[in-house]
Image (cartoon, rainbow, N blue to C red; front, side, top):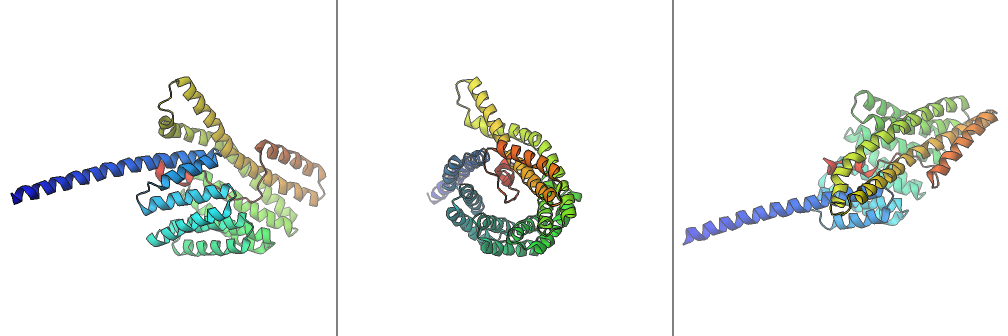
Length: 343
């Protein structure tokens, strides 16, 4: 009798373990789909819907790592909606969890996100404080990518504050880091070139405002050439990525569609919106670069060339359909920023 009870308990334990495994797998699959869908909605500019999707995902997280990912996402959506207090609330929750589990790379990323949020809300002192914390940790753990990105952000703020020598110091270091990463093929070439362009842009802007116009023109025209090349390759790169995302995400979203033609039409519309959403960032950066080159030519008395860049700049700003943000941060689309859900 005792043996039968023990046996039944073992069977029950095994069944419960199997149920737990199945349940965990179901929740993980649902979380993955919600995360992917939210990422895509964010990259398409549908921020309120993305926020609701991530809020649903937050209800079913199973691990601290998953919770950090979703809290981070929610914070970034609120930031895009310019609700900076809400953004900081969620980013700080994510930061606290990342610190508790000792994920230093994630700590660096979130500190950087908090710094960006303070910068966008024009609280530069707070932004500098968080960037400094992020940079210190990145240096301690030899996180070269984190160091390079943070140094670029510091350069942007120093330009805004008129501390141009500090900008030159930070962004020269950032350039060295991204050239090193590019040589070693330790980072996607597009990401390297984008961050190199950001560092050059900051350096060129600093040269402009301290009156070193020849150097400013040389650096900014190099920046423009790099950014033009980035724009050419981006649409092709992202169109290939959307094809793979269609299979993983949109197939699930439109699986029950009764009319295949309607489904294909929806897919095509989303592809177009997705490409436009991503490329607009790069085009805005092109226009910002032209804006500075225009100023350089005005200062050196070449009004005809200045007018040429002014017209090109205005055409791009108009085509972007929204105000151009001078804050020149490279922001990865969510499906690239959080690649763990696309493995």
